[in-house]
Each structure stands twice: as structure tokens, then as C-alpha cells.
Amino acid sequence: MASPHHVVANRTGASASELLVDGAQFATLTTASTSLATSLDLLRNNSAYGDAQVAVIHTGGALTTTAQKTGLYNALKAYLQGVGAIAA
View (cartoon, one colour):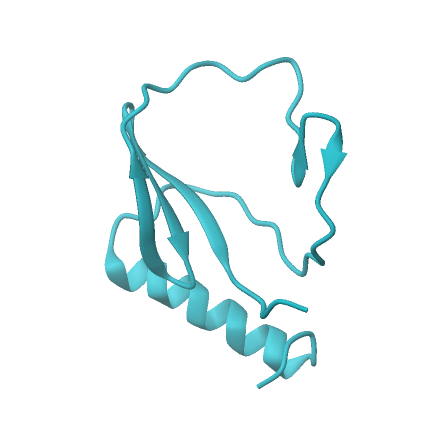
């Protein structure tokens, strides 16, 4: 089994977003935002679902500082380790 990761899609502007993996920037994208389709599918690509286990899904405002990005990752990791959801 693959090791657990914290993955965040972070929209930082009308035409800017980034992908964070374990609190660090992994990729950037400069696609302009558009309205959502009539539905929103999480953990699904077209009609296929992923086989990964999910411990946390969260939503909120953009993470704009490095401290916010690493702070969220570290807090969730500590919590999940504390409840035994992931190895320490």
C-alpha cells in the first residue's frame, strides 16, 4: 500500500491555482476559473472511483502563506497519528 499523503488543490486567484502535497507546492496551473457543472464528484474520474482510503476531506478559503500550508498539513498529520489513522 502506498504511504499516506495530504493533497490540496488551492485556488490562489481567478487564474491561478496550485497543487500541494504534504504541505509543499507540487504544481501550478494558470487556468481561469469557471462556474461548476451541475454536480461535483470527489474521488472520481468520469465513472471510475479511486481505490485509495480517505481520512479527511476539507474545504475553505485559499491558503496564502507557507505557514498556513505547512500548519494545516502538520495539524492534520498529528491528529491522524494521534487517533491511529496513520503511522507515526
